[in-house]
Length: 118
Image 1 (cartoon, rainbow, N blue to C red):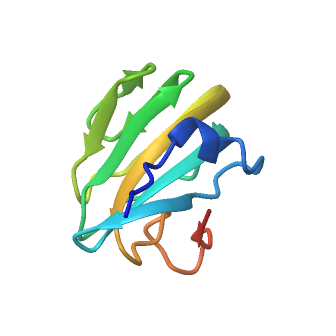
Image 2 (image 1 turned 135 degrees about the horizontal axis):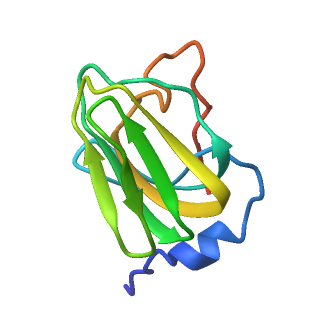
């Protein structure tokens, strides 16, 4: 039986909303997600996990309490667990995220986006 690869660019055409991660795969208890972001997200932290960001297209600034990180296409950054941070996108940015299954994207279940499969 032939397996089908996940085409990230194709998945990103299937939705328009910002700050709403879409699950495209799972592995070892982690969710692999794509998202479109624009503007500023809230300052937050993840107490029990690092936060993985990979830029597919656009330019992303991640402000952290330890200093800022600028990312362009093909670059990634991992925010260490417990570090306050917020992503900022002056123009729309497409990103790939990896988080443990069930981890709220805002670090707080009360304010997190609902993740769905696409």
